[in-house]
Image 1: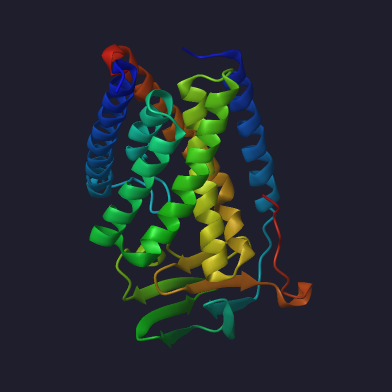
Image 2 (image 1 turned 30 degrees about the horizontal axis):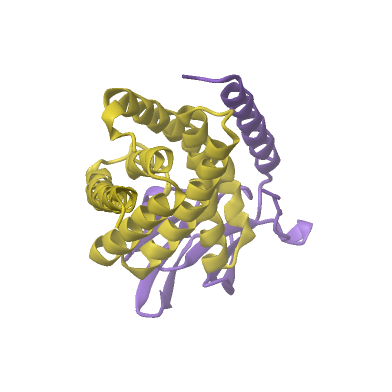
Length: 121
Length: 174
């Protein structure tokens, strides 16, 4: 039932997965929180300053809480609540995504220019 | 009319009826899957039960029928349960995975398990690319590693199940 080509493909995909993992594991500690809504910048906030940001967009509400150097989605009115369950993030490789409301929270390093890391699939 | 033409009509009717049954089965499996909670809160990690049906359709009915079954499943379950955005995600994943599985099937050097594994990865890649487009953000690709392994896992699992089903349904051959 299993053929040689299957096993070759298995290891190929495994290798590809490991390469992608290592590429996306280059984490840094950031200092700013970037909130984007529908791909547009909503605002940039200091990671060291505790606060709660209310994001209202197209009738949707998301609350983003910055506390003790980490960020979490404390409230979202979306159906699946995946973003709320993501928990707190504190490193540049991390992000919180709310697909239904199209809200994304990222941590950036303003000293490094805050550039996005592009991973080619 | 010759009896040969009659036979080809009968075959087409048989294939069409089987496609309708498989489309219904795929929809039910999509629905059942939506009710099974996944242990990790990452969107896109799922069993892919409907993929079983699509895999069987590719191997036993052909590409055209598999495509029709997949599209019917996506649009009907989308309209019933997930909405327009759900349809977009499902279409991207479903069509890419169907294409990859069909191509691997055509090479004839892969088994159902291999085709299903690649299909699972292709499905997740298609959905992730759609998410990147909708969110206009390439950073979402950092989820790709996780989704790649998840796609491999569920793909292998569903491939084995599809193979077992094929063994037990030899008369399904058309």
